[in-house]
Amino acid sequence: MQSEKNKVNSEGREYPLGDIETKTCTHCSVSFDITDKDLEFYEKISPVFGGMKYPIPSPTLCPDCRLQRKMPWRNEKKLYKRKCDFS
Ligand SMILES: [Zn+2]
Image 1 (cartoon, rainbow, N blue to C red):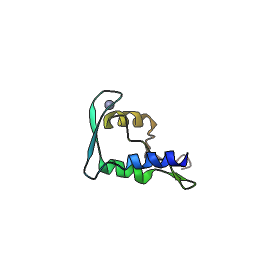
Image 2 (image 1 turned 120 degrees about the vertical axis):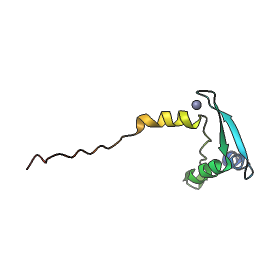
Image 3 (image 1 turned 180 degrees about the horizontal axis):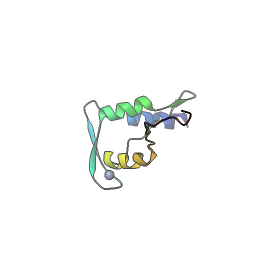
Image 4 (image 1 turned 135 degrees about the horizontal axis):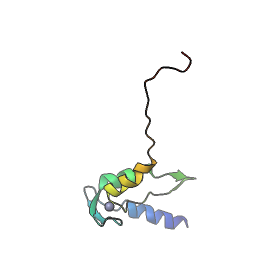
């Protein structure tokens, strides 16, 4: 089990520096690039539990579709200027 996890890790790191992976969005079929910097970032933010690294997979959706999926979860604050109820 341990060796399987390590294999996934090394697969995630096998892209040489400066390499760009081109993927096709599974939602809108637009092709988009995943740079080595992106992969580096996913590697950096991958959580480690009990000494075991759980790599975050590279995205399957294009940036636009990811943004679209993120937007409903945003909770924008709006402050209003008005007189206090106690005054
Ligand atoms: Zn898309």
